[in-house]
Length: 232
Image 1 (cartoon, helix red, strand yellow):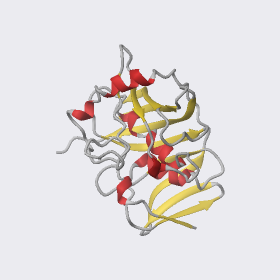
Image 2 (cartoon, helix red, strand yellow):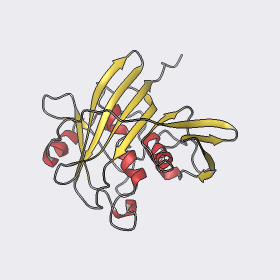
Image 3 (tube, one colour):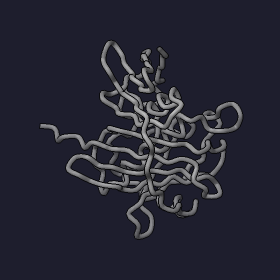
Image 4 (tube, rainbow, N blue to C red):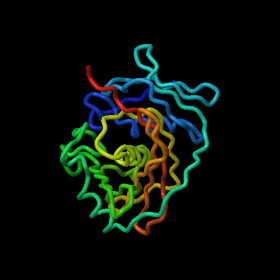
C-alpha cells in the first residue's frame, strides 16, 4: 500500500486534482503502460491509498474507489507538430480566454500566474482542426537533474485534448492512457498538440502529444472525456 497526496496547487476543478496529473502519479507506481479510469473526483490535500494487486492499481479514500489502473497498450497515430511559432500563434486563439469552464486549472487555467500554473493555452492553427500551444517548463517542475518530472509530463497531455473539441464544452476526464518516451528539459521550448479521435453522444475521445525543441515526439496520450449533463 502506497500513500499519495495531491497538493491543492495541482487542481483541475476547484478542490479536486487535475486528472492528468493524478493519472501520472498513479502510473509511476506501475512497471507497465497503464490506462487510468477516473471514477470519482480526486480530493486534494488529503492522504489517498494506492494499492497494487496483480498489476492493477486502485486509488481509494475513506473507503471509496477514486480511480483504477490496468495494463494497456497505447495505440495512437500522432500527427506532425507545427513549429513553435505556429503554436505560439495558435495559443492566441485559445477559447478559454473568452469562456473557460475551469479558470483555476493547474494546466490550462487563465487565472494561474506564470510559475504557478502550466498555462498551456491550446488554440486552433491554420485550417487544421487540431489545437496547439507552446510550453516552456520552469525550474519548479524539475526532477533535480534538469528534466521535467513524469507527473508534470502527464499533466501537460491532459487539457489540450479537451480543447480539441469544437466550442467550449464542460467535460470531465474519464480515462487517460499516457506514454512518456523521455522527459523534456527545464526551460526547453516545447510544442503541445491535441486532436479529436471520435465523438459519440456525450463521450469525446482525443489524442495529445508533446514535442521537444527539435519537434521530436517525447510523449503522447489518449483520453476519453465525458460531457457534463446540463443543469436542471
